[in-house]
Amino acid sequence: MNEHDRNAAAYWSANLRLIIGSLIIWALVSYGGGILFRPWLTDIRVGGTDLGFWFAQQGSILTFIVLIFFYAWRMNKLDKEFGLSEE
Image (cartoon, rainbow, N blue to C red; front, side, top):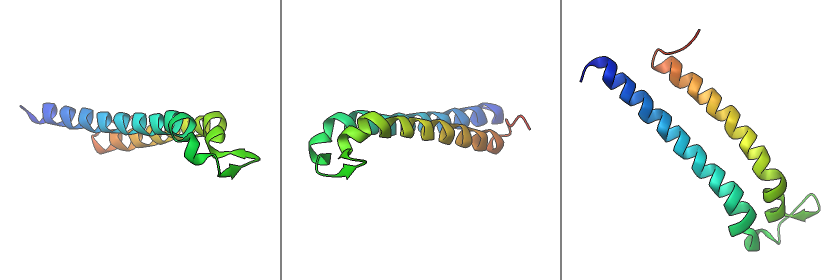
């Protein structure tokens, strides 16, 4: 395997780790916070409602927005690290 192939494989591996990590966070927040962990989050109040409901309605949307910006920021760093930057 030449240097270009190793660089491409490392870049793809880093990209997959980032995608898998983002999907795990997405699943924990949307399904975990809103459905699975709701009985344990019922006693915690946020904005007049319980935390499980808040995660299902507001928290998951805010988390998705944060994940989008985090993914874009991290991919820009990866692009620069592997010499694929557009700048």
